[in-house]
Length: 152
Image (cartoon, rainbow, N blue to C red; front, top):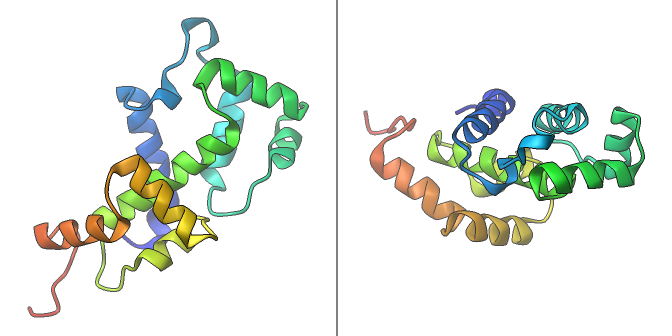
C-alpha cells in the first residue's frame, strides 16, 4: 500500500474496529455513545495522525479545556486521546506492513505514521500485535499479499 493511501486506510481500520468492537478503546457505555466531543477529537486525530498532535491542540480544536477532553475519553473510550492517537498510528502501521511494497521498511512506515522513536514504536507494536514489525512484513511477503516480486 502506498503512503498516500495510509490516511484513508487508517480511517477504514478505525471504522472497522468500531463496527466490530474489536478493541476496548471502542467499547463505549451506552449513555456516552455518540459523544460529539469525542467524535470531533477522534475525527481530527484520524485525519492528522501523521503529525505531532498535542493535547492542547485537541483542546483548541474542540474548544474545551484539556481536562474536559480527558474526562470524556476516559468515560467513553477507556483511554486518553493520546492513547487513541497511538492506537490509530499502530493500526495504520500494521495495515501497511500487511500489504508491503518492494521498498517497505519498518523505519519508513514508523516515521510515516508519526513515530519518532523507533525503539518505542517497536516495543508498542510488539505489545499490541505480539510480533515484531519485521515479522509482519515477512509474513505478508511470504503470503504474497500486496507484494510484487521482482523475479517476475
